[in-house]
Length: 131
Image 1: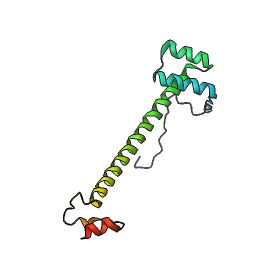
Image 2: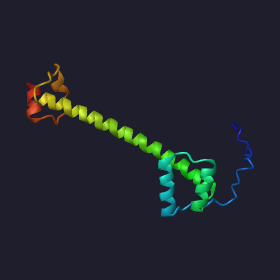
Image 3: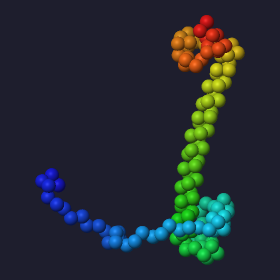
Image 4: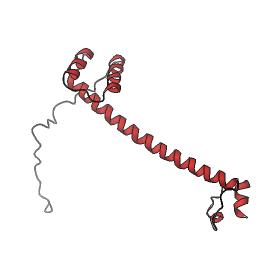
């Protein structure tokens, strides 16, 4: 606290810090293939289906459950990246279209636009816009 006294932190009993960390599960190629196939079919596997899949793959139900949770998280993360990339590609395509129209003289440039052009706007486009 503010007076500099020492406080004891009591951790919950469920949090056993002395226990060694569980080793990471290494899935075989066959297990991964089957898990991916099941994920493509259905992103949520529960009940008997999960029990049976775990038995067939010689894994615990918890391992199967956690694999599916992690896979759904990965998919959401990848979809976010895809969405961001599509947005950038879309903006780039729109910019290229505007520049192409300007270059072809089909789009009237508003007054003051030449001053806004980046230094790389040279050649036919830059000349046309500068007057």
